[in-house]
Amino acid sequence: MNKTLRSATAAVLMLTTSTWSVVAAAAPVAPEAALSDEVALASATQEREQVAAWLQRDDVRQQMTRLGVSPEQAGERVAALSDAEIRDLAGKLDEAPAAAGFLGAVALIFLVLLVTDILGLTKVFSFTRSVR
Image (cartoon, rainbow, N blue to C red; front, top):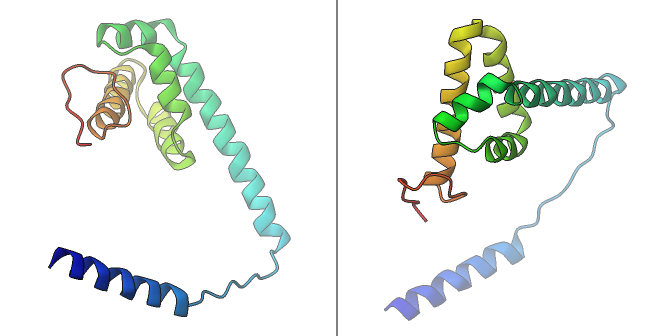
């Protein structure tokens, strides 16, 4: 039964992938669109630098160490974030008051590290079990 099902599924997949063709279409790009991409890239770079500078602060590094997070690993994780995630994190750093934002941002970084541990992407905390 299992072999028959597997063979039938493979046959259907081969048939559908060989008969369906995807047509790629390219359209001219307006200069304004190309310019907005450059602005977005510059903004993302600036936000990455802002978050990296924030992570280098002594009070932030001390708090991460107290919570059991290696500042170097946190820096690597932040470097691996997408532009949208960096934009979100940088926005939260700007919105928060000086003292309250510190704890919130450290908690955010802790949660990011915890989620990546649970997903099995890294192994920072010994108290987590990955789903992989």
